[in-house]
Image (cartoon, one colour):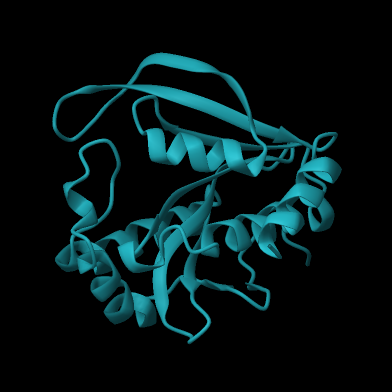
Length: 197
């Protein structure tokens, strides 16, 4: 019997990166990745400490079981997990999804891996799953993340003021971006150009 869910777990692969269905098998690599650059100290984003990786994997897998998330381990060219990403806030009825909860170990940031990863995820969403839109959200003050999202070709839809309470007690204004199905051909051409420079 076919799954009633529009977006389900899968593996995505290119020459530069593999997005493997997340499992506890990835925990040792991801603990090392989380320790690279003490990413958990960034107050405006949520990256697990090395000790929290297994718990975070379990959290993401429970959301997979609930049908609201498809989590991946990001595997670099050598086959080691260097970060995590997800399809999240999945709207199965409307074929709309957010790409988020993404983090990379510091040593692979700004290497082109993120572009290759997002190209794979966007291509699958639009070309295999016929998404009507893919969304990206980040803290209004997370300049690095906002610049990366804008480089992908996503358009700013707006700012959700006082959207979330963060673990440190501050209030997050959330910048919401999207790429629509109509945008995808031009965005894809640009991402492919960026990936081969």
